[in-house]
Each structure stands twice: as C-alpha cells, then as structure tokens.
Length: 157
Image 1 (cartoon, rainbow, N blue to C red):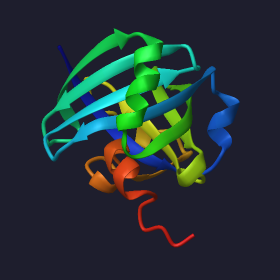
Image 2: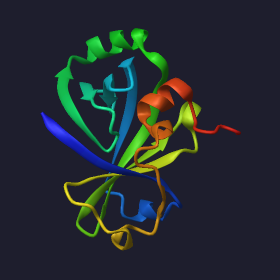
Image 3: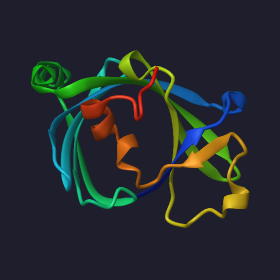
C-alpha cells in the first residue's frame, strides 16, 4: 500500500505545454463512490487497465491500492459505471525537480485543466510554476469521482 499525498491546482495558461514530456490518453470510470472510499477503473492509451481502490476522506492523503486487470474485463465493467466516464489526456511536466501531472479534460468536462503534484514534501508556493492557478487541494468538486457524478464544477457554460 502506498500513501498518496498530493496537491491540486487549476491551470492558468498553456505555457506548461513547452515542458511537457509525455501524453497518456485516459478513460476512467467509477464503480463505487462514497465519502470515504472509491473504486475506479482506468484504461490508458486504449491498451492497459488498472483497478484502483482509495480509502479515506482527506483528499490530500489517502490509502491507495492499484492492480492491473485484463483490458477486456475493464471494458465490460464500464457498463456498471456511475455517472459520466471521464476522458482526459495526462501530460507529465517537470519543474524544478518535481513532476506535475497536467490533466486536460475532454467530453462533458471540456475546458477543465488541472495539475497535480505528488510529493512527500511541501513545495513552497514561491517555487511553484507560474502557469499554476488557484490551489484546489481538498475541494471535493474537483475530485475525479465528483466530476464523474456531478460534472463541471459551477457549470455555467
């Protein structure tokens, strides 16, 4: 088991794209969601599938278990998805010795761009990249589970 410690931010502009090192196409959906746990299936680049179980109500630090599962099983499980299936592209963006994962959402969440930083130490605000916008760590509206169930936060589009 690994303890997941993360910070999340909205993204201010597209200047991060100059440093992006890789892109992963992600399709993910939830099979169970409660305030203290979730069960997620993620298909990456159309060829690999993982089952993830997360426990705990603190969005910045939860217990997480992940397992590879057969792709065909993952595709069958999608019929049991709660809410909307999330479609996004994830980019790995290095900055000052840290790796940020920038998710660019598509479909029902088009226009949402979120950056996540997982690290055991707290990065000083002055060391964060300038392309980051407001911090949304702990804002349940921006958790992927909430996005799947409730859609774009404050959607006025």
